[in-house]
Length: 98
Image (tube, rainbow, N blue to C red):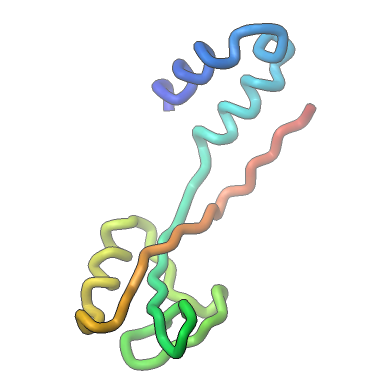
């Protein structure tokens, strides 16, 4: 986190940084959390998969993993002729008062 903040300070030096708005933005971004899932390409569209045997295109029903590596492993279980991709979503809202 400190690396992100240090880099942002170099980029955002100026009146915005002094006002605190830039600091709040950088701090919020540095604390974002993500989860990862797998989509497979079937019937001409990308759909989220719940298990290897059944599927549902609804994002809420998808299996979400805490790390990208776990999602990549799950994606690797699909047959080689079935395209699969790893997708991510942010689970921590960014709130900046300003």
